[in-house]
Image 1 (cartoon, rainbow, N blue to C red):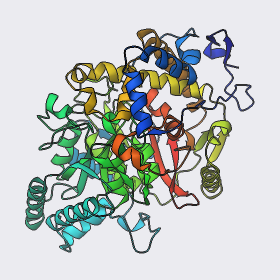
Image 2 (image 1 turned 180 degrees about the horizontal axis):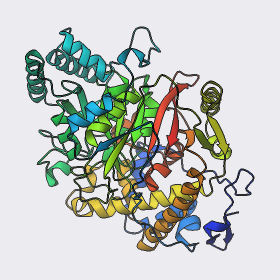
Image 3 (image 1 turned 60 degrees about the horizontal axis):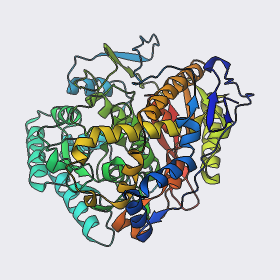
Image 4 (image 1 turned 30 degrees about the vertical axis):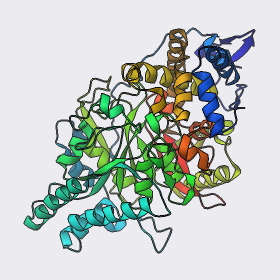
Amino acid sequence: MGWFFESQNTIYKPVKDVDLSPNSDEFYLRANVKAPRMAGFLIKILAWILESRFFAAMLLYILKDEILVHRLISFAKLDELPLFVPCHPWEDHKEKELNSISCDSSPPERVQQALECLPPCSEIVQNTTSPSFRRWTILDYSRAYISGEITPLMVAKRILDSVHESSYSSLQISFFINQNAEDILKQAAKSTHRYERGELISVLDGVPITVKDEIDCLPYPTTGGTRSLHKIRPCVNDACCVKRLRSCGAILVGKTNMHELGAGASGINPHYGATRNPYDISKVSGGSSSGSATVVSAGLCPVALGIDGGGSVRLPAALCGVVGFKPTFGCVSHLGVLPFNWTLEMVGILAGTVEDAFIVYAAISGDILSDQPTTLLPKLYFPLLKSTNSIPNVKMAKYGEWFNDCTDDIKKCCHQTLDQLCECYGWETVKVTIPEIEVMRLAHYVTIGSECKAALGAHLEKMETSEFGYDVRVTLSLFGSFNSKEYLTAQKFRNRHMQFYMSILERADVIVTPTTGITAYPIVEQSVVYGDFDYKNAAALVRFQIAGNFLGLPAVTVLVGYDKFGMPIGLQFIG
């Protein structure tokens, strides 16, 4: 075993002594979550106790002990040095099926170069799961605009009407926190005129795109899902990623709903409404980029921007049946994004298709303008996807114990998908052991909590506790309980697990997992008013996603099927 217990100390073997082979005796520790789902009166009582002067310290100690933070992190003994930022050195690729792109090229130029990597439009497979509903792609919009079948102005008006209908009817999906109809129609009118003059900027010209309300985008305030954070931290400019989309002609159609402060996985916001899953409005959409996932899933927009600090793009994408892509840490500028943490979050993309995610990634990546640590990129590499032949000889690392730690429907669906990839395309599954997965989840939790509390500390001091939902009040109390020694130990685990994953990725091209351990679950109506603290479901939702954030690795989720209730199932590839 990689660890054993000695009183409350957990002693970890040196990395070189840990066996990563499929025959390893490493023990797979399942999440030990005993806490019930709390909403309504229960969560109000819990928040009050955690904020009280007399009982808070004792209860927080018990909570941390119950979820094994003390045993696996606080009192851990390990030899590794801390790794504070998961930057990856730039590597020069020699594969033939890549196109080298200069980081100095403009966003419209990069978008055009991305298009030239794709197969002809007629060869791109469309999602036609329902004959009465099909999500339009970026190229669908572009072709319709060029032909004059529709105009950007017509599309903008239809989006505004649809959002109004879904927000004020019995649906109450709560897609957006903020929309400015006048600004949206103004952008659409300008794009329409460009098409009339034959002066379109790029294939993104006139394409509607939404932005999570954690990203600065004028003329909107950036609330972070709160009531009043925007009053303390005003939005004075577009975020870098938003500027790049504007420079391509995209229409920014509003700020999407999100879990308050990004501090939850359900997408339920007591201030702006529960973002409901378009596949079943009685169920959660997932968070924290909930609104971004639902606008794409519902077909309102082909693409949306989110932020992924702990699966917050991939998780709702999987639950809502769309593509969710988190790039490598530092490859997209973080300038103009609320600083909820410094070493875990990345701007991510939610899209109806992989092609659309690729096109938007081309637009927002490139030369980094940020005060956040970054990966230095002398050039970008875009995959050449024109060939009708599939990509051969892909090796997928799979840890069986981890892969199977999900519901039966997810396990069956994901296994069938792997079998099809191997049988139809010649891909290969490589069996491995990935140790200490639950340890990494807890180390990530300590990291994201410590950084969130530190990053927002000055702002939080100026806000009344009563302004937050009760679930966030509970979460912030937990975040504030982590000390500097625990944070430092978590960074030692970052170094340790980076070595594990790099070793595995030397023998495989990707690591493959289900995206989530469960599918979308029902919304408790009390939580719509107060928020809910649901550590058990949250742990199951993020089970497979932590490596992407903690180790800065690129990851993507794609729809591969549905459970017995018709809810989407995602499969994740980690690079």
